[in-house]
Image 1 (cartoon, rainbow, N blue to C red):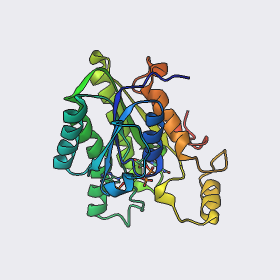
Image 2: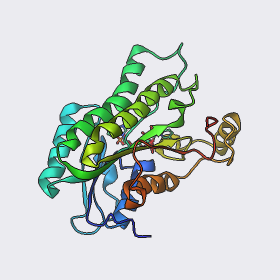
Image 3: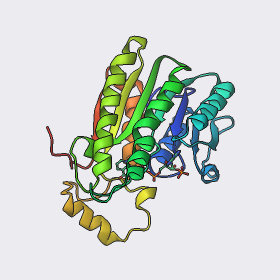
Length: 246
Ligand SMILES: NC(=O)c1ccc[n+]([C@@H]2O[C@H](COP(=O)([O-])OP(=O)(O)OC[C@H]3O[C@@H](n4cnc5c(N)ncnc54)[C@H](OP(=O)(O)O)[C@@H]3O)[C@@H](O)[C@H]2O)c1
């Protein structure tokens, strides 16, 4: 199916590995032009692309000056941004007893505030009809005390997606989220098979496995595409059936 994304300009945060990398590669294969950045941009060097289809660079989504510089670079190169994927993220697992103030602040900065700041900056250069997809976690709707900060801060991200969707709908900009259960990605690399087996048992994942990064990126591309033209404010769970809420 042609997703109608050829020639459009996408900014994907954190494209060096995991879900972000899969989103970047899938967008490139659809003929989109893609800008992606992360804190270790040398890890973006191996991504295959056609001439003038890929722009990479240093980006720290927790630093407003870095966001401003990266978005400025994309806009001066391609003149606009049609799609934003707020993907970069990191987990600060821990219980209420173990999480420090610093952990809480870092988690808020890399999740909620990164999405807020990047979106605010990109909207200055996004035309009517643009699309935004935010990565999130099902713990934001199904809290878990082992992932205390994620549960709290992803709930805020869910509200951010839905509130922003209402706020930019008059410009025909659609805002949706892909909410992850467990997906095999950079953050789980190096764990033994026992860890994955025990995790799917403990969290009662009906499909009895972690997802693959491309299973998450397919959902992101669907939401970016014309096939989702009447969807906004949707939180789409990619979780192998793990969420227990209706
Ligand atoms: N995989 C899961 O099971 C799971 C579950 C729930 C939610 N999620 C969410 O899904 C998204 C993608 O996760 P993933 O598992 O694919 O992660 P990952 O494999 O660990 O990759 C994270 C990407 O984000 C970049 N990044 C991290 N901190 C950054 C920062 N401050 N500024 C810019 N880039 C940054 C990393 O590059 P650098 O380190 O070089 O910066 C990397 O490119 C995240 O938002 C995550 O919270 C994932």
